[in-house]
Length: 88
Image (cartoon, rainbow, N blue to C red; front, side, top):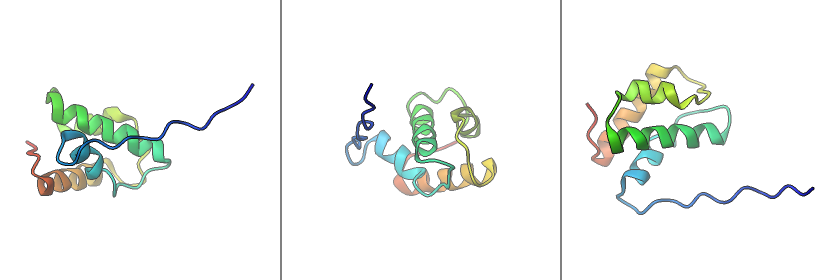
């Protein structure tokens, strides 16, 4: 049985919600790179559907953060504000 390397992650178009979401979590320290991917996906879901507040989206990502959730939410909110994505 052979194990292949995972597929490369294709970045979304510049200026898209995907790009804004993943760029907003780029500076968040996590235990593994995949934790950052999960966090970026949760932020993208937040931006796309606005069902839950941002802090709940971060919590539901299940990412193993190396900083507090409150600090992560504050950093993400600031990064989204800089990219022009509005966050309530």
